[in-house]
Structure formats: structure tokens, C-alpha cells
Length: 287
Image (cartoon, rainbow, N blue to C red):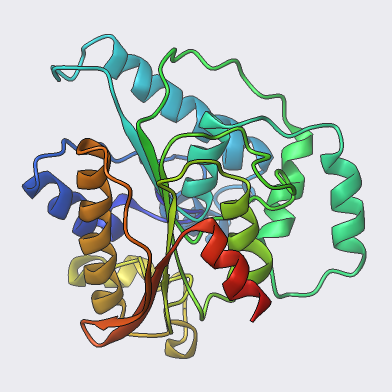
């Protein structure tokens, strides 16, 4: 699931990698909050998307897909599934599997936005969740795992193990993320999860936009973002290759029922990285 204003072509790199490794992949094109929708807004053809587009319709898209899978419409041998998303797409995965926002969200938002600085733009999106009713989950199964790039949700689940999500989760983020910063956003989301296999892949120099691959055939469309190279961080292709390597390894560990190894201060593909558990994240945060 792409993030806000994203498109599925940006993530074919991970789909191809996983498909070659034997996992069937489904991409969800969230009409109403995808790239095409944002282009229509800029061109004056559509109104700016609202909280229903950001959350409600995306959750319904995911639910419809999983219901079709559960009913055998894709012809797969079982009804298990793994959720993966970037930014808002990652939040939708967490919302679908976890506890819904409580009545205290509005109060937390009032406090968070009083002294709001443009260092965590995700808070603006999170606070819109208080405006929508959450639909009942029609899919009766739980995901086997969640994989999230540049995740957010600290206002929804502010306490440790608060999300109610107990399935293995791999979060991936970079030290150069200015949209959902590691320390005061992504680490808090990670602490709200609860499984011994959970790991956080930290890639030094990677940004919020590092997982997005701009294919030559789509460069013109993606000009809508106008993202300066200053905000891209380390070479996105290398970040994507390193991420794909650890995603495949994480999924193999789940299949083999193995606990992933904690890795500190390593270098591969020209990138410095860490693969940490919650306890190591706590130590990391203190320093």
C-alpha cells in the first residue's frame, strides 16, 4: 500500500523481488488519495482529499481485497496474508490489525498541535482520525506479519505495547526522515508493538522518500512531488536493495519460526545500518 499521493509503480521493485522469492503480491491503488488524485487537485479538477479518503476508503479497499482472498478468488492455497505499506500505507496496515484510536486521541492532538513544528508532519494526518467512524473488520483472519516503511501513529498508541498488535513486525526507517522522524515518531510506534521477532531496520542517511523508486516511464507524472535531491538522502536504489534483502530474510525467519538476530553498526551496499529489537532501541534512544 503506497503512502499519500503514492502510486503502485513506485514499489514494483519490492513486488518483483518478493514474487521471484515465491510470494504472491497484490498492490492496492487507493483512488482518492493516490498520485492521480493529487494531480487532479493541483489542476483544479478535484477538491483536496479529506480524512475519509486518507483512512476510511483505504481501510475499505484493504478489507475488500482480503475478503476476496479469504473467499478464494485469487486461487491461492490458503488464506494467510502479510501486510506491507509505506508511510500512510503502513499506518493503514497497523490500524487494520491493531487497536482503534481511543477517545483520548482528540485530547492528545490538542496538546501535540499547540506547539506544533514542521518536524513531524504525520501528526496532522493522525489527528484527522478523530473525524471518522471506523468500519467493522470483515476479514476474520489476522495477518502473519506486517512490514512498514517510514511508519507513524505515535498519537494513536502513545504507550508501550499499546497497539494490541502481537504479530511479527518489521519497520524500516532512515536517520534522514524529516516527515516521520525516527526518534519522536517511528521509535514510539515500534514500542507500541509486542512480539519477540519484531525488528527495526535503521538505514543511516535514508529519508522518507528512499523507498520510492521513480521509473523512467513515470518521471513526468512524478514531477508533481518536486522533491529536491537535498531531501532524498542516500542513494534510494541502494536503500531499496538493502531493505529488500532484510525483508526476504525477515519473512524466511517467520516461516522457519526463527527469531531474527540483532545487528548493530554494520555496513552493506555502501550503507551503514542497524537491525534492532525494542530493548536495543531503548538503549539507542538514550544515547
